[in-house]
Image 1: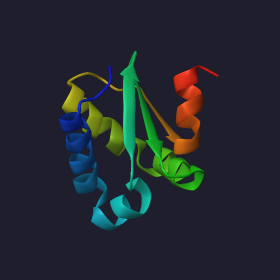
Image 2: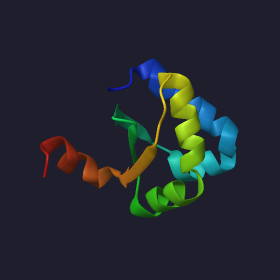
Image 3: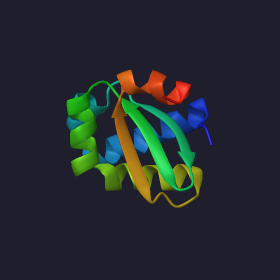
Image 4: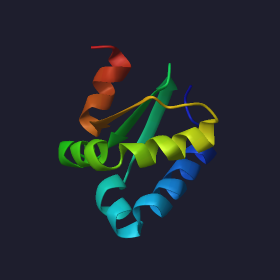
Amino acid sequence: MRPTGNQQFAIRTILNTLIGPGEFDRLCLGMQVECVEDGILYVFVSNEDCAAEIETNHSDDLAAAAEQVFSQPIRIVNVLPMDFSSQLKRGT
């Protein structure tokens, strides 16, 4: 399931509230929720350091935001740097 623009906005808004504006601006600028498949949320962020920090410290917050927006359980959060997005779309 690919999120609509409104769903993207809602997830960002909820996450901003959960982790705080300063932390959100530092880590999530340009964040793109790619899709939800079989309870796995795929998210792209600007770089590898941000991806690692979000996955380590804020994956529960991201899962909670996505669960609220998509009305389905999120079991796993995969946060990847943007440069991996083209590889995922090509299937390589």
